[in-house]
Image (cartoon, rainbow, N blue to C red; front, side):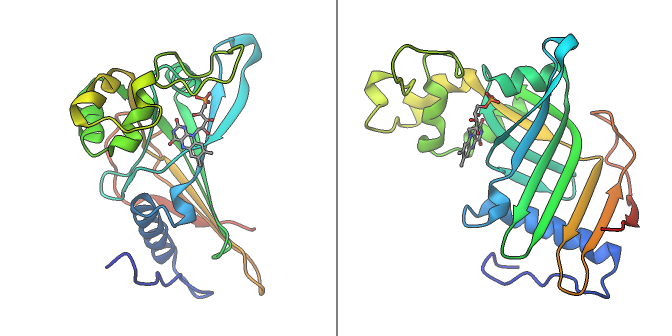
Length: 221
Ligand SMILES: Cc1cc2nc3c(=O)[nH]c(=O)nc-3n(C[C@H](O)[C@H](O)[C@H](O)COP(=O)(O)O)c2cc1C
């Protein structure tokens, strides 16, 4: 289906299968289109670097890839970032999507694996535009305090973009973060009652098989 076609959302007589299909359609389109709210989820993680004081953390990210067949959601970040350290220490993440116009919330929970310098990272890196690659040329680790405002970009690329060869050193700092949801929850608000459903694959560990159909259930909103 072309990306400009409207996506028909399942109505009050929806089946769980139709809801799950719509969810993946919205996710896959959202990864391709910056104009969709689905392009801008919030990634929540556990900051367990100090196990005595584990705490929630969350930030806006860009959904870069959604793949129903592989059941994967991909985002990108700096390999030196807090989120990467958090996910490596505690790879249980949650992605929250909010589609304002459709009055929809989708939450996806699952292990999130960070890929740095491997084939997964390379495939993702090769699709990136210079404007996205430039951020990974940051000379210092993101999140460090600084005495004065600092864009953390090399002098040469403050006002212009690197070409492919010039951006290549950024690959060392690039992380592709791939989440494989073991559960997805759909909530759609409606005048005559809200619609809430949950889909569970039951394979909470990273690397488990893609699994067949999820256990699906309605949930009271
Ligand atoms: C609109 C928007 C999109 C963003 N997209 C990303 C992204 O795709 N990846 C990323 O690492 N940070 C992204 N950020 C920055 C994060 O929200 C966050 O501030 C930064 O990554 C530091 O997070 P951390 O300290 O938890 O690692 C985005 C911020 C905004 C406002």
